[in-house]
Length: 159
Image (cartoon, rainbow, N blue to C red):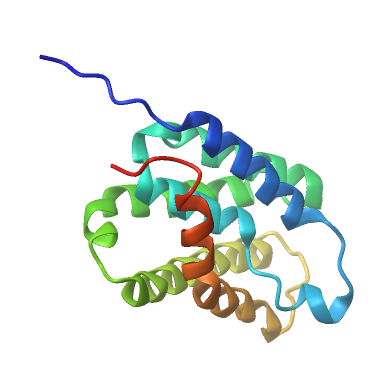
């Protein structure tokens, strides 16, 4: 018997759209330094919670939208988000069964990988490299992971 499991695609798209808005809204300089990568965290959550709901298409499209909004090299955020989504989808069963603290450490590592890919592409494309403050985004995202997890897990019925 083939029972179709309903994937939470509506919640995924809505949360990705809201995260994209939070990602590009202008903030004062001191506050934008510690702003977590909202879109990346949402992609990580949905890649763990429902990996088949968006696949790799949704992270790629969200990355392209982020490239357009930020005026970055077209495809750099798309590549980094797709890489992050692939890794978290590949190991979603291992990550899902960890305690929330260990998940936060894994999210920190994945966010650091995301920033590293963006940093490499910026360097290779000749863009000016920001200061070392760009590495605060993974720390903030890792610290706020339990909050994001709690909020996003209420948008659908987990399996």
